[in-house]
Length: 268
Ligand SMILES: [Zn+2]
Ligand SMILES: [Zn+2]
Image (cartoon, rainbow, N blue to C red; front, side):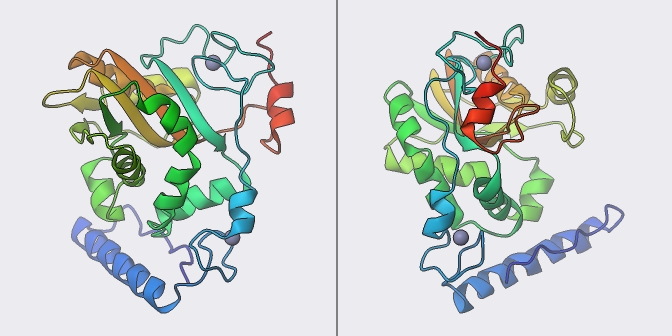
């Protein structure tokens, strides 16, 4: 079940694509009813959509981290070589784990394999960090998808995570951050290119809370989170904390274990 479906070509008419995505969602829903006891990450028998082995193998990011961007460092630093000199609009960013192994697969399932039920588990994975930040915010927001992408997928994975966290911590959900510019895929772009790519891509509407916790699935260079924070601040937010489920490993670290991440730290 839940095998990755072949992509429908970009030349496919939009009406067919949206019909196809509807069929995929329907089949995904049925298969979850028929075969409910399987791990959506490793496909072994499991009473939960995420089995204990997969959950236990998530590589959690622990202190010390860079105080600004949350990169694992040898000791706490106010900024690090990853974020120093970048004009990041958010107040600080934190991530639950390293984007590798089972955690990477779980996020893929959440996004591309109709793994909506994983949102509960992944939001719980970052709940401790959320608890630390929640006392200082008025609302929870999330990085939006374009309308077309959200219609094709049927949901926004970051929105699902944010909903769960907001409900659990009794905070209002701010839903009026929108992606107003479609941007090319960000894969393999550096911070500067990503920054140019996403500039002006987001806009906040309505009354923006003063202190916001912004949720996303993966932190890569910080450019998307920074642009979202900029949009929120343009409409009155003073503080924007960012919390993501995972963070991509650094160049050369291969992301295999935290030691490698720390070894690549040249921030001291
Ligand atoms: Zn598993
Ligand atoms: Zn940093």
